[in-house]
Amino acid sequence: MFQQERQTSSWLNTNHPLIIASSGGNGHISAALSLIQQLSQQQKTLKHHYISKPKNKKLSIETLIWGGLYFFNIPLIKKLSRLEKKYYIPSPFQLKKEKMLLLKQQEEHHQRPYIDYLLDLLPNGYLYTAIFNLLQSQGHGKSLNTVSKGQVFLDRFYKKPISQQLQKLLEQAIIDGNPFDSIISTQALGLPAICHAVNVYNQKIPQLEKKHQKNLLPIQIHQFITDIPKASALHYLKPLQSIKAQEKNYLSIHLLKLDEQSIFAEQNLAKHFYFYAPEQNPMIRTELRKKNYFHDFWGFNILWINHKMIACQPKEKIAVLMLSSAQGQTTLDYLKALIQKNIEHIAIVGKTCRRIQKQIHELQQQSPSKIYLLGHLNAKNLRKILNAAHLLIIKGGGLSLMELASFKLRPDCKILIHHPKINLGADSSQGLIWEDGNIQWFLEYCKNNQKNALLSNPLMIDHHLSEL
Image (cartoon, rainbow, N blue to C red; front, top):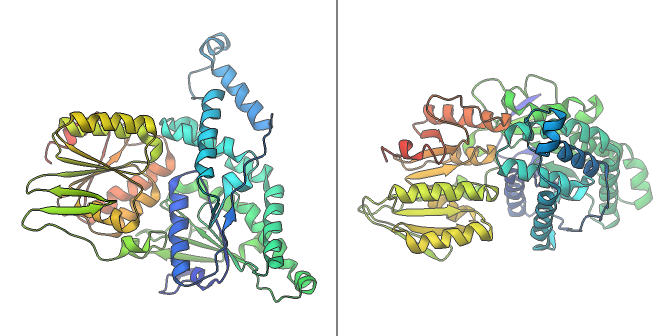
């Protein structure tokens, strides 16, 4: 059953939802926080979940498998075993360092308004997240695709323990006096386990009502797709295809509306589908979908963002770097290229590690360009800096591109989408099938909506900025 989204959506009719996001990509969490903000404005009851440290496993099947892969990836062993240099395998030392960084990031907050599927539900999830982050940040697309294909195995292998954990959470909410009436998820990992847990819970409602002396509502699942729903998003389809017919009765899928028929709509994957135009997409923060800020006054542009003033005089340009925190070295490479092109104002949005921050501070002291480390921005400040930008440099995340499609930029703004392998006349595929699909859609969207977007990388930026 296909439904065009109305002003009041079914997911907003919930009163006490359990929110599930994932650390495997910033978009999943950003989308969840956007939905949480809108639920809070509707005065819905939201539970905050305490963050617990992972159990300290000395050894696990995953650790042994990864250790074996790394052993055969050592150059000498690889040469002796005649294995092709096909995949990149992070060392155990890199994985340990990345896991420690994840732990440190989690310890900054005692609780959060959502459950992190990878870190809270999946056994040994910190290891999987560390592997994913390292492969993504270092641009190893082939290895990342191979790891992503293992999602189906993880869904099957851990379906029972994850389903049991969720059933305990749902029943504990009854005991606490605030039973959940829906699950809102922004990632498709473990969706078979989520659907199974909800089906078991809903079948047990008569027994649970009798046991706890409470009236209970059947739980509904609202699954939001944070990538562009094209054929390249098939990694989302695989877990959906394994869901039983009875479990699909509780499942609704929310996704971006495309001009052509969505591949998700071609298959009987859920009971309901909700399609959103870019400017009405609830995964995008409400503030980003309001009217735009334009500050030009006789050619002058003055912005106050995170206690920093950006004062742009006539004919001066503002460039905004908005790459993920995992792309620290890439951010630095672009920054150096922009300085060489004499861009007057360069704003860096998002978190950066201390090593990168130190190098940026050194460039701030040496460079004639004014460099602004803005850190994480709320939606209002993000919209301000994006609306003022003459140049945007971003990566091909689904939600980032949906955000840019949702509101107007300066007519003269040029968007460069980071692509590690692109050069003049080269194939535009970078090896990450979902990001390739996101980028393909965005380039077509920009072409049809008078926006100027190109694929680029630090080596190509000189060519792409020749007209700026």
